[in-house]
Length: 519
Image (tube, rainbow, N blue to C red; front, side, top):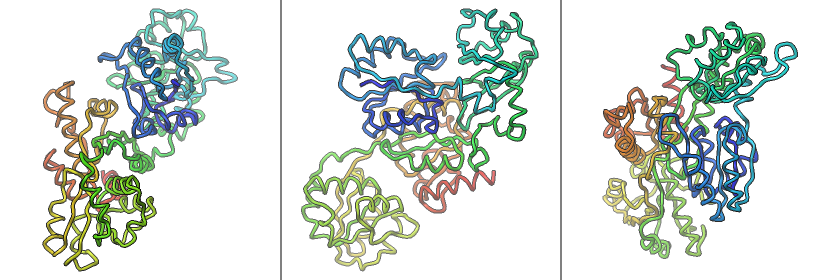
């Protein structure tokens, strides 16, 4: 089945229930530019994501190529989601895609979305109809003004114009040419329903002056006397409505765009925490977690679990891969009954609890560096199993245990690497200078983030990236979860601006809030 899904305004908060259901079981996702990373994150970890977004003035997929891709993926017998901004049947070029699917015999379902035609004026406080001011409204695309009957359009009380900011001057001229008063109210609503929302109001005669130098796209333009109702109905809230009709607008991180670097399969818990504080979060997978190159070492250790006294797990990935392998080999948590378990970090402990296991020891400050100093047992003669990432990275920890008489068995439980590409929403936001803060929860995300930026800058040099990839971070606040990650930030970027006092995701959010309040 191919699902043609309307993503609404792009934010997961405005996604329909049916749209969410379909996304949560998608095997292939084909998506547009105006879709937020939070919506993309609803897909399963193993979902293939294919970006086909169109950007004005930039190389992009043709509609014929998108039609062909849909058919190709649909014929493979998978659940394919074609995710479109707004509603599929409102300027969504859905007819072409449906014709291609029909011709190929691919079954499909259309899932409606909340169109910005209705949502943008509403979120800006502008009713489209009114018993006195407007008995109807018309919706039009401003992409090609020459093709429209402006003589008829100018007679209508309310107009809602999509894709019209590039041709705004021509549209204003046509409306006034065919009878609209130069004093007719007009509103431009940019990025409706997001923390980047902004509203400009004026008259046909002065709106160009009021918006000169501003980046307006993506925007919905409303023309008509109903625009005046905004001031009447929401007199006290107009300042808030101008920035986003959202109760979180006065939250500590309101107006801030935070780029979240994370594992490609990591849940969006951190994003949820940031959103609650009012931030606009863009997720950027900067780390891929996969199986180790060989299971031999871990399999041997699991077969000899009875020989070990302690099991040390320093990450959520270590917990998942170790426990999954345990089950794969026909064992369960009973095989760990004689072992004590030490974990590093609240998150690791929580993931372990999800496996019906409780940690016997969590070091203070939630960092591995304090594990040896505060270890509850005498280390002399202890045999410790340490499943870890294949590439290592805890040599100091192992050396300290060994120096104190413990025997540590290190085995590869998983592997980490750099993703092949940078996520398009993240790259677009960096190129446009929209990112205020970038967060790092591990040293490896720092290293791979730098690799991705350097690689992408070489492949697609832009105005800001022409000098160096580091220029993309000019004016961007760099936030770290703890000392080790901070040092890696200094090595990679020459600085770190925020470090969490408590080395957890919650602690990192608290540090961002504190920093924002000081600013």
